[in-house]
View (cartoon, rainbow, N blue to C red):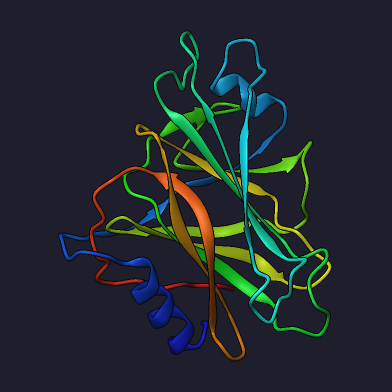
Length: 210
């Protein structure tokens, strides 16, 4: 169990206007690239838009960042009409001897469930083969619009997470993500790309690890 301050502050940082909230565990599946591309384009080739949220003004240093990646679901593909939103936390060039990260909190909004290869209905996918990274996602919990992604091992300096993603029905917008960790401060924030939505505040945000 993570220390309470990290979770509570992360929840407050990710929330916005009050509204109804219902906590739910999202289904997380592992996939490979380029097979994941076929969900969003029948040609199995996608054109991505990348952005980077630097962690320069945090204890992690200027070499650490959160990468956001989006690409549209094309006509004729299972994910047609949606947009894929992927994230990767890169600490390969982070300041050494800093505290490790435990997860990421994103005010994301509604998630579209799709069937990911091979025949896995889910809300969240993790690209564990054919892509960058070495640390995956243990769990994803959605409370209102806010999703807490917990890594399946601590993400420390010199490491990168895998890309992890989900689909949404709305276009991208600039937003903020919260990364939570042990140490002081217990959380750090940076820019991210999320779907456009009217935010609702969470009521019961929690994170579980083995």
